[in-house]
Length: 335
Image (cartoon, rainbow, N blue to C red; front, top):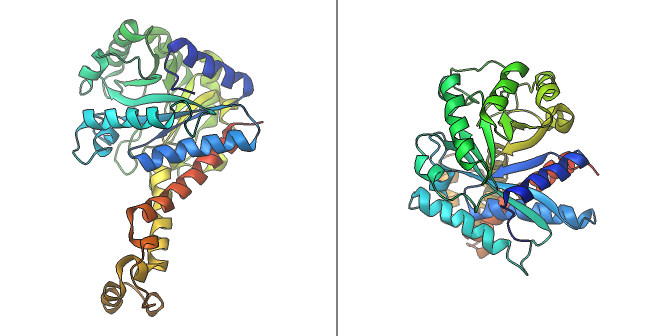
């Protein structure tokens, strides 16, 4: 099915998901391999469970200073080029007669900055399904005023997610307080956003699953605004902590760090196990002499297309990411 971008249809996707008790995963990408791994996992989930179709969200940041995925989508590091490539990849993969016709694809613009992305915010957003308008680095009253103005201007065009608190980066000195229900409800009422990002204890770009998700805070928010909470920073906590998110009022979960972080060790394992075929006996011997590899890697095998090509490396990443996305779908799409 084509990409779903019309606001009314997007709202219906979320309404249908809520009726099923589903939490829609919003998976960020900065390359084609990740993009297709997400679509492939969703398509497989639909087939395996005899479903006509399932929704999934592909997301990308634009000029977000912490991680501009649009810039990373192209080696020119031009965010406009990267954003166009992101859309083009999605459109080709979702074309009629393509490989993923059983997926209802939503395209999300994540962490769109009120200042750095001002040009984008003024542009035609009709090709996208949802947007996170991010003014969370401003004092709360300024955040509310900016977000309200954006909703008034673009709210009839696109489904809007706002952030009443900034979700901090792991490893930094800042640690935000858990968002209170009253604060979240007041923010939503005054801005008119469709969904709200709340700080529930998670952090962006965490290197380990060592934080605590505060479900009790989410449930308190749910009592006031309903199931309209968006959770960011999910990679910083274990799946066991977030397996019942819909019951807590969460309707959408943003994920990226875990996909990249957990795929990297598998790529390293593949390259070490196939060291000679990936780099040649000479390089293996050099690294062995330097103490980085052991005798076990010195197989004497010649370089092989099965190990040294970009395709070989990308396939390792693709398979790991696809498996992870499938696990998220199995967890949040309860049948």
